[in-house]
Amino acid sequence: MPISSQLKIAAMASIAAMGSFALAAGTPALADHHKESAGQSQPNLIEAAMGTGVHDTLVAAVQAAGLVETLSAPGPFTVFAPTDDAFGKLPTGTVDTLLKPENKGQLTNILTYHVVAGRVPAAALSHAIHEAGGTYQFETVAGETLSASLSGDAIVITDGAGRTSTVTTADVNTTNGVIHVTDGVFLPG
Image 1 (tube, one colour):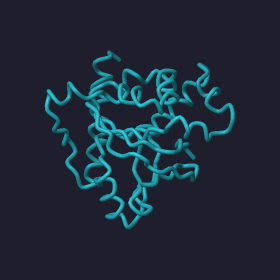
Image 2 (cartoon, one colour):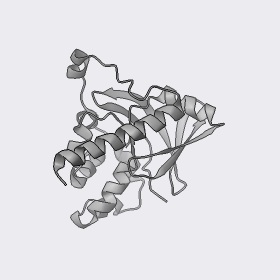
Image 3 (cartoon, rainbow, N blue to C red):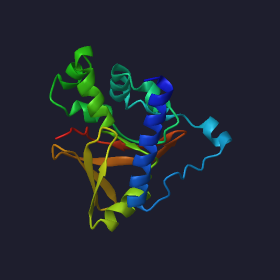
Image 4 (cartoon, rainbow, N blue to C red):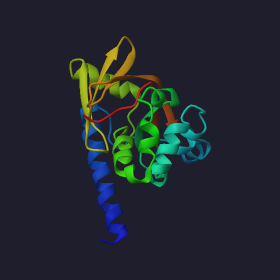
């Protein structure tokens, strides 16, 4: 299949996923209203992660998985970005094992489990949690489900393995999406 057809299919799938999340969250599907001049002054998702000083492991993993170009594309995407300390909570050797070339598929699945198609600010996610009665389930780019709930004012994400992570910094806006920093790594069930 020609690359242009693959890109069209991927774009349509992304728009469809954005639309269903946006409808569920009660926000417009294509509400990406940043001005060109503002976009030039903001970094993209990858540049923002590279500039924090606490996402070195995430950036190395994205590079090893070959996802830099994808996450630098227009998107928009919402990334739940685990810190280096979050990766450090995984069992010893897990990150080194995942970064090996033979584990690229598994690493890609874990990383895309942290990505949602569309720009989903914390306010929209909180609204969706309230509308859903306290727990809101949503699909990631990996095709897996995450659950969001609130603990006080903090958004808590529960992964497929039943592990919980808290959004420690919300709404880091970039040219191609938004980052929510988490204190844990999501693992599919």
